Image (cartoon, rainbow, N blue to C red; front, side, top):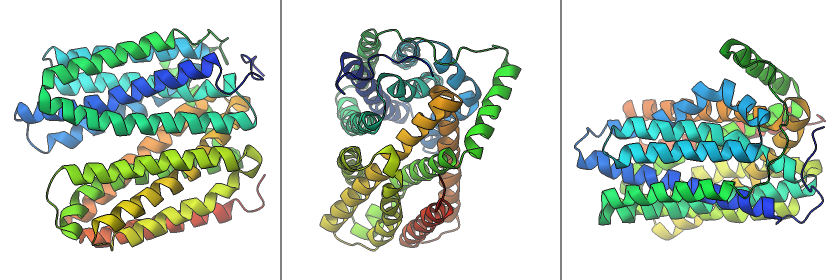
Length: 398
C-alpha cells in the first residue's frame, strides 16, 4: 500500500480544503463556460443542432483519453496532475475568449477535465481512509453540485450582460483553481508507470478494466455510477421538452431552475450518505437508487410547478444518497488493486459511455415521436428495474 498523507488528521485538513476549493472553482468554470460558450455560438449564428455537439465533444474526450489519464494520475503527484489539468482548461477558455473556434476551445477544456477527474477522486483515498473516505466523497459531491448550480446560473447571467466578459471571468476562475492546487502537498506517486508507449498504456488500461470487472464489488460500483450519471444527463435534456408540454411554460429559465432543484437535492443526499453509510454498509444506498426511477416516473405525470420542484428535489436527494457510497467503494477497492487513478479512469469510461448511449436512446425516442411524458415514465421504470436487478445480483456478494 502506498503511503498517504496524514490519514489520521481531521477531515477538513489543509489538503482536503485545498482539494475542495480547487474542485469547486474547476467545476464552476466548466459549467459557467458551457453556458457562456452556448451564448457565443448562438450569437455567431451557428445552427441549433451544433449546440449538443459542444457537450458531446466534451464527453468524447473522457472516452478517448480513458486508457491514459488514470495511469497519468497514478504516476505523478495527484495535486500536480490536477494543476496541469486546470491549466489545460484555462488554455481552452482563452482559446474561446480570443475568438478562435469555440468547439476547439471547449474540447481542450474536455481534455483537461478528463485528466483532472481521476486525480481529484483518486487523491481522496490518499488523504483520507475508512469512514472519512465516504465523508470526503460527500464533500466532493456537494462542492461539485454547488459549483454546477452556481456556475450554470452565473454563466447565463454573465453572458446576458457581456459574452466576452463572461468568457474572461471563466478564464480567471480556472486560474484561481490552478493556484488552489498549489496548496495541495506533493504526495508520492501511487503506481508509477512501467511504460509510456500508447500501446502499453492502452493494454494496461484494459487490464485494469478486467481486474475491476472481475471484482464483484467494483463491478457493482461501476454499473451503479454509470447508470446514475447516464440517467442524470438524460433527465437534463428531458426537462427541456417536458416543461412546455406538461406545464405549458415556454421560457428557457424554468428547465434550468428545475435542474437546479436536482442539484440542491444531491447536495443534501450526499450529506446524508456521509452520515449514515459506511464502506461496510454501502448496499444501504440501493433502495434510494430504485426510488429514483419511481420518482422520475411519477414526476413525468405532474402538471403543477410546485409538484415538479418537490419531486426533482426528492430525486436529487435520492441520487446523492445513492452515488456517494458507490464512489467511495470504487476508490477504496480500486486503490488496493489497480490504483485509484486507474479505477476512476475506468469509471469515467463507463459513465460517459452510458451518457452517450442513454442520450442516443432518448434522441431516438424523440425522433420517432414518442410522447415526452411517455418517455419520462418509461425512463423511470427502466431505471428502477435496472437498479433492482443490480441489487439482486449483489445479494450474498462480498
